[in-house]
Length: 535
Image 1 (cartoon, rainbow, N blue to C red):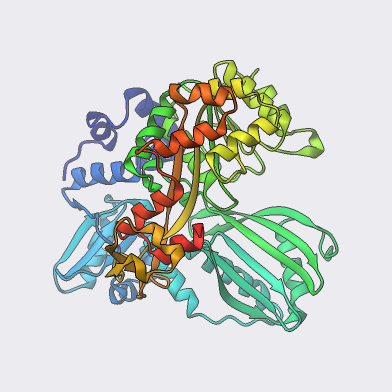
Image 2: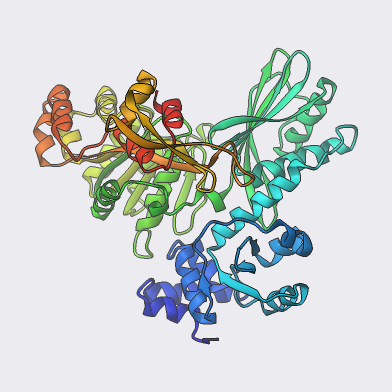
């Protein structure tokens, strides 16, 4: 085993600098010797892949980069609790028994595993985030098979088991909705609501009180709207749960938004942007000033993208301040402020205060009104980099919206740097998807625009034990508008018609439809899926 310290390996590879290493070593010392790789990832100085490569160099193992397909028999022999405790994934492999480790210094685990199996065992190093997600899929399947009673004291257990299952499955929301006959529970997974379970109506008030108690809402206050939150401990981490309650005609209707930082903090390079889009975004991040907007409907991943941008450009030398409603992703090396109208904390007031706080970068959770738009512009004019979201469907719509909020065309032309509109589409499962040669004429009219030739190979969803209805996770489709000199005159005059014609004439400018076509032809997603999202 190579005993060279992890920090020195990363330093020699140029993945971190000496200042970052010294900073994290001090933090590690203050936290009782926490693993250095975990500290470096906490501050977003490196990626999971960087740690895996360095650990592999230390121990002389290979880095596993394939599909995480579980060996369920090996998982049963070792037990899921053991696998989670030691962060080990049992890999189904045609070459014999194999395991993927995220922590290579766990000698007791390697010895224990070797003693459990008669045949030779191979060990790999894997990215901890990928490994954790793969283990949670095993947990999710196990919980799907468990039946919990719904009566009396077991109602709390029933709720927490479903809450754990939702987190394990990567759900973003839990919907608890009463109807005339029952209370229905559904999980939103990969943007799709899926049935989970039902509950007798007589249990609804007790269930609502359980959730109210966790969120510190007055119990039995079923007649009002409530927005609250609580923290739920899942495995080895805390998951923030936002509670929305409305008094429906059949009783309390609840939606629980699950904010799991371990899954929300995705690297910008892993979101799925096309290479040319990624290059445009990277060039925009280098600029020390200007406004970058991420737009789209609710649930399209705007906040995730903004934080991925901040984390990509984060450094000890930069001061970053955010104002959000609410703070969805807690992040290191940032000062984060949550909107609180009762205390007079609004978006525009927060941004105005930020300018006296010596920032380099400001994130505005949402530009909702004219005052916030003006303060965002003011921050950009005074030499700050500003990131923000805005509810609009297309880049040109965002320009019109900002002008409606009182931002002049001249200021927009000179201070708006980039507008990104995006949607999330489900990825086809790489193990079971099937390719078919189709003719454009054979597709419904609304699907023909996603083919570039009269006859092409496209892929469709099937189903297997590893995925959900042929899909596994989501990726982004986007339209990226970088403001360059050729557009300044048109924007300054508010000539949106000329700007629209100009973009159509640019061969390298892709609309959402064209970017979706790219993913369809690459076999990343299906025609049916992009039609569901874009029409």
